[in-house]
Length: 225
Length: 225
Image (tube, rainbow over all chains, first blue to last red; front, side, top):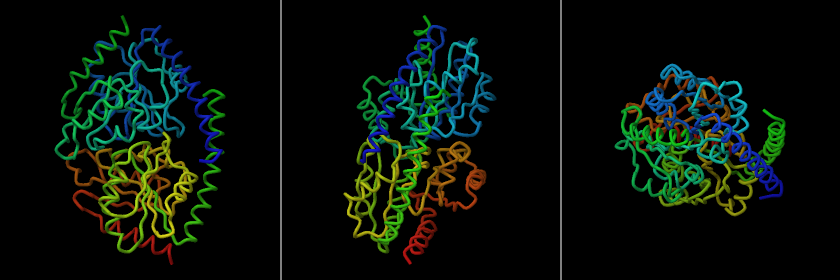
């Protein structure tokens, strides 16, 4: 690595320190308003939106939910969430960026009017790398790994598993189609983060949704007491 | 967005300008040595390594191949390539970075000894965003989109489709398992890049490999004339 790469690293470190500070402020601010904030991260196409539709429909009678859909371009996800759950959703465009910062969330919240919600859900940019580095200010990080992606992802993308409180293995109905050793995968996840709760779901076939919904409900209520 | 975000953007722009310059130098240097360089990009778990094994085994009698496997951590891919194809492969770790720069490739090449190869293949970090921004110095960018990821990816991740000469739709044998409109997907890809060549393959079921191999062979030979 040449000098200029090192200087880039230090710029990034400063950025991360600033971001962590902003994220802590935002988390406290949301807590003071009684709002629980969940950040959902995963690869592109791992089933984030499809799972969110199920989770939101199960939680929307108990909580007043707002959803932020982050993408580099397009508004297909905000539209899907809105039409399939009827909760309020906005599309956040990242101007090409591969992740969201706490500052971006704070700015988006200003346009969103959070005074009527008590559960804020962010669907982060589809990416197993960068979103893991930037604390969004969420109270809970939930990451998804889909069966078609393969069981070795915790070996290759350590950080996202380290920072996630909940890891959800999605598209579990396709286990017969792909080589995916679910016990090995769980071992790899636990190696990265021994405290991670692991759930296995299929949003399409409605498998395992209830236990995940209960886990989320418990965490949201504990925070709002 | 606050001022500090803008300053980050300008740092990044300088970095991209420097990277483009370095990438052009590297591309010329490789051409002068008769080496064709292919950069393979895709989401995590889209089937890059599995497809590469097939392509390399089809091309290795005609070309002297070297493979660079880039990951944030782990060496499972370099090991797989090496054991399944017997071509020379090295694992490049990115120190947490979500992409490779041309400088990183130049540094890796120094340790790799390219004097005996005429085809260099890079498997980039699994990521649909950042690798697309950084020219690696490759002569050909090939991106993979797997059927389980969904047909809407060109809508959400425009740049990677714009910069790729070849787009390969992988895991085509799972079309019956997932909702994936292949004609819609091709239309979206063409909207991002009208010149992109699109191939449909299943590396596991050995579907469509031959046409892709022929396309690559033609491009490599054209460059080496």
